[in-house]
Image (cartoon, rainbow, N blue to C red; front, side, top):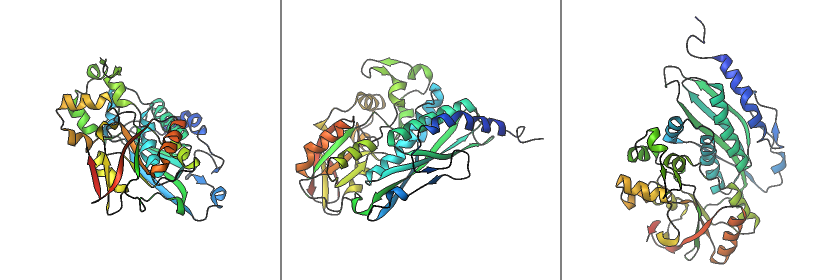
Length: 341
């Protein structure tokens, strides 16, 4: 008896590391100390010591059951982008700059080429966010999960000067809400998605004119990473007063998280075009509108609050970063919460 006969292939683990090295190397920053393969990742903080009060911010998350679609379509090169996005967008939402990222892949069986492909997506997400992939773990779990399945999660650390943390504390009535377009469903609500649509390859490979692509392509589109857009806004001189990453819980749960007591958000549903994938989901699944907005981003992946005089400049900065902005509402006085009208 040896470990391989028990279901864990150590040699496959070594091969996975070798195959992923070329992707990891492309994410390096000058602050990274050491290389891939150590017991821990090291990152120098020396270049941030000129901040008045450097403050670490962190985020951890996974991709949920969206990985099921990756299995069905045998497409594993973008799910890593989703994992990175879910972590670094939360950091950016607090005003932070993501510095480094670590991933964790649990699999039924280590297929080195598949693992390397997953990590290639993680690396691409890190490049989009400007953070370094300094470590990770691939764990074989024979008997715990099927051989052809895996789960993916990650963890990121960022930094922000304490005075620049976005808290929403000074939001005022009349402040403007600006939304940034999502790429689609992102990485939330896939348990419902998998109930709405038949999860078979024929259904997912079917082309739909209203989507302009196959259903699988629309659903598997990677989550947008908004780090560069928020950095562009900051560099333009605009101070973001409040920020909400629209993830699980949609508008109704996430927008109030950026509000102080006594402030209410009013969002106009007709201020932008809801993407076709959400209209199809509501129609095919007979999902009520309130439930759609309480589960999905509905085409808006991040919402910012800025002073009225900064609205135009904010939208210009977002466009300069390659994202699409919409002026979607305003802050009013009232009970902490959100109204969609």
